[in-house]
Image: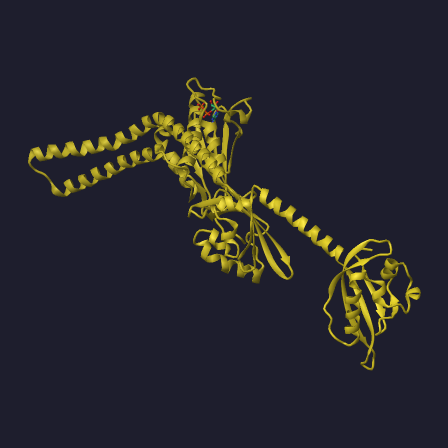
Length: 498
Ligand code: ADP
């Protein structure tokens, strides 16, 4: 009979009037058989007879009687702990008419409590063995639970953080903003992080700030909200990513240094022109001074020309230095057409010498995208130089190069195509051209296109080749717009806990 509620209705003197079904089954008597017997002689075990009798009498007198626990024995001999209660019932006239004795099986209550405790222990052991940090906060932002992994990650013991505001685990400025954020969320229900995974920053007890991945869940508990945060320390992953990025930057730099030798010949020629002009002006002036009739107005004019030519030469050197500078990948919002013209500037001499006719088409007002300008310039220099070489080696009578920039909508991005009217790449599968060490040139290294692909991949973009019509090759690179708008490659730093 455990788990049931026993009900006996008796007269004010304790004589049984009626028993509920559970009561009948427990004592093995029907209501009619038990009718008139004193309720305390049937229900409790011997040691509680008196207590029950007093309870019944007090209830009959209209007094509040405190519930008490007592043993109860079934007719099968089994004993259970029961919580007894006594209530007087008044009739319509307001006079006391009967008493009700109720018995709740405490065994069942204890069993439920035991099960709940067991569930709690199981839940606790899951929390404690979890690799991820798990913490919960209430609507007020105060920490309600903090598992072992969270202790390990943040360096605090649970007792040090329980009941304190979760913002203590965040660096500024998020720490100062978190309460408002939580408040706004509870009012507007506009989710910024709940249900989503985000990369944010955490603050350890020792004051170090570290990157973490956070996912937040929300549950409603008796009308209030509890937020659960699952935290993964991604310091190691970030380190590996940044090493990979550095490695990629080193490779890209190496490729630029390698191509510098080829570019240098053209650039030396470009520097030679202003130097010759400077020399010419200077010599003419030495002659005029020697002759003793200097005209100060034309001297000034010449000096200005010398300065202008000097600036031209300095600009060529600046361009080259910037190109081979070693630096960490640094993305800035930029217009791809600017990179196209920088790349063409670097190759000006080569294009002129080989008689390549260049056409540039780019839409006005194109959106800026987030790129490392030097590296994207490097990709374009590679593509343009390959095209020049292919057309020159094939002795194309009127080599033509077209650089077309278009804005794409799905997916959103900007695409630059480098089209030539050279020999094309024949039967070679377009993707093979991008494999490291693939080359058809006698002195080629086969590194150009593979490093272009690495750079474009690191920008979240695509690079590919296809045949041109009626002849030649088209190499295109596409870069996503989302990166310029703060998503994609940018690490987002948001608040922890909501
Ligand atoms: P490399 O220039 O050292 O050969 P790349 O990786 O830059 O290395 O190029 C690989 C190969 O792709 C080239 O050897 C060539 O066969 C082919 N290729 C690249 N660009 C063109 C082009 N515009 N036209 C025809 N073939 C090309």
